Length: 173
Image 1 (cartoon, rainbow, N blue to C red):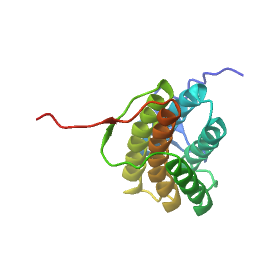
Image 2: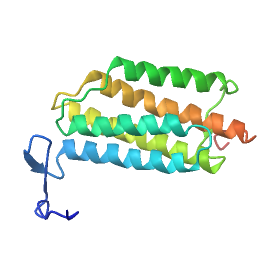
Image 3: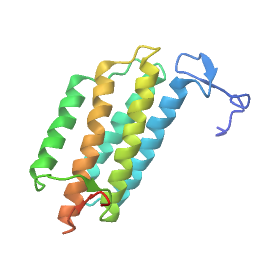
C-alpha cells in the first residue's frame, strides 16, 4: 500500500462517509488541530516517567475526537469528561495551592505539557468555531475544555516532582 494517494492534490480530502471537502474547510482545520495536539501529547509522553498511561489514554481520546469530527459514530461521553476531571483533581491534590499566575516552563517535561496546554486551547477554539455552523457533541467540547486544565496541573506536578518551583508572573513596574 502506498502512503500517498494523490487524491488530495487539488486541495480536497475525504471524510469517513467518503464525502470530499476542501482541506481549508473548518472541519478539516479542527481535525488537523486535534492531530497536532495528539502529536505534542506523544512528545510529552516520551519525556514522562510518571504519566505515560494517562497521556496515552488522552491520545486515544484525541484520536477518537478526530474520528468523530471526520464523521464516524464514535462518541466522547460524560464518562470521559468525568475521568479527566478525576485526573485533574488527583493531580491538583498533589501540588501546592496556586496563588499567582505562573509562567510556563521548568523541567523539559513540564514545558512540553505547557505546550500541550496551549495547543489544546487552540484546538478547543477551532472545534468551537466548527460548532457555530455544524453540530458538534457537547461532551466533546467539554472534554477539550477540561484537557487544557489537565495539562496545566500535570505541568505543575511535574515541576514539583523535579523540585522546580513555579515562576511567578509579575507585571513590569
